[in-house]
Image (tube, rainbow, N blue to C red; front, side):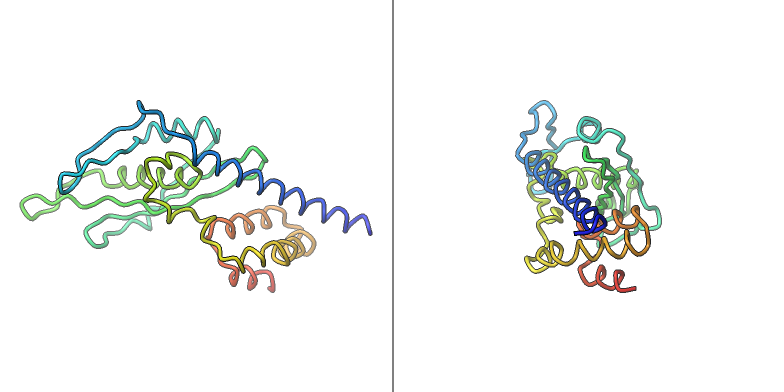
Length: 211
């Protein structure tokens, strides 16, 4: 076996080990209980009460688990739809393994109506807070409170055939295209993380690799 092949195999194994470690850590975080003092309640419709955590609590959790995180809203995405204001935001984190990840999510806030007229409110702030919580939930935070957000666990959305493709030949083809052909390590990591986060599909990935 040539030194190049050995080097490539070593890099792929390191990436696989890192992904396994990240996945394990996320699963552990999902089973961590939220401290009772952090949980707040609010009155909802039909007399129901809802539990939640505020923005500060989410930020503190991110500071502890992912130091150096940043959060960006996409102003061009904000729009009104079906009685809500919605907007897309992106959370950037740094894993202990050295990988940078971007997790995106939509946030929303119901338009407040009084006397048949919309009430002015800081909808953008509420949307950003909602999106930040959803991103944190995907990382395993506050899962005992926001169990209804299961649809945002992108890592569980992959079909078995996509996982099989990713393990072989997907990851190897990504490496050949970005590292061996283009000498683009950053491009390789960006493409890999977008695939794992559900931002691009298997078909998208195959199309990019072929070009």
